[in-house]
Image 1 (tube, helix red, strand yellow):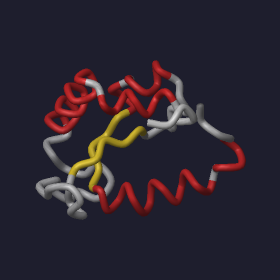
Image 2: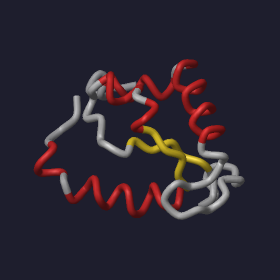
Image 3: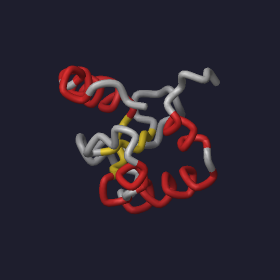
Amino acid sequence: MSSNTAPWRRWYKTARWQQVRERILLRDMYTCRKTGVLLIGKHPAPNSPVIHHDNEHRGNELLFWDEANLVAVSKEWHDSDAQKAEQTTLQQRGIWH
């Protein structure tokens, strides 16, 4: 991992994140909260599960771990709609460290 990598990226590799991820998938019944698609695919399938931050955390640790801010979505939705929305606000949000 590069020294320029944002510290919050490491949080996704932790056992804590894996536990949170599983809780969110169970809470949301393995269903995409944006499209209703069942999240039964294996990565990188379009219907594989991704945990999405409804409000961008921007490196804010409290917001990153806030389970009320996390929803289960499909990889397809996350890679298209969510990423487009984040790119649209790039100038407003700046670089995340």
